[in-house]
Length: 327
Image (cartoon, rainbow, N blue to C red; front, side):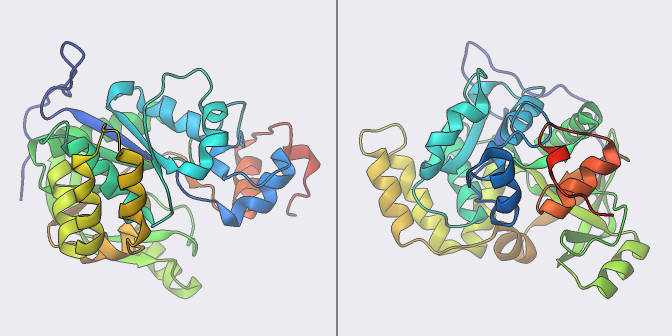
């Protein structure tokens, strides 16, 4: 078991260049949000992916996510992974925020491709980087509490980059549409509490199983994770070698004249893979989970969940009153 070390500040940039071992952020914004499309059409009048929609307030979900992570990571160390087809929505979704680096995938090859593409891009600039990966479509009410906990996990991983550490949310009900994490023995400590080894993942369980997991104290998988960049790539090489190899070859083209061409070639024959199912569930290395404090976290995946969450929190954006609400 790895014990806690003295609290240290996160690495910062010096002279405009990342210091080796700096903290980097990867925001995943390539999903199409198909399950929420009916609600998005009522809000926006079109079928844009949900991360480009101001569902909760005047800012889009993507802008909220980027703003949240700017509390830890400057724009020059933020990587936004999206789709080339999303370009029409991107500038409007971010507004006047200073742009992070945008990696526009030519095709959707799943979350494994998105994460490994960003990891290879970061590796070319900082071979000992610590990387935070986060989706762009979550509701987090107590943002300062969440980011303080995440910062503590990041400090742990900066000391122990061989660990892939996930954030697990405390469940409030036996949800069947979320992934669950069953935690095992204690693996280490952060200033915010212990880390636990991951025993097993349960993806979208049945109602009966979800009730069992809820009673056992299992956690909702937020899919927010922290790892050393080389650890991410090693996991990709072990679990999805063909995909990782194709993306790794792009390193020679990053920033060069033929980068777009090389990206198209790499994705043309690349296999599709989920990072959760294809990598994390078969991860050969050290995999841990950190339990978040009691806070409001929600994956805004379906219209029913969005409406239920807004009703419970008393949030009423302009479009909300025009929709039928559940009894």
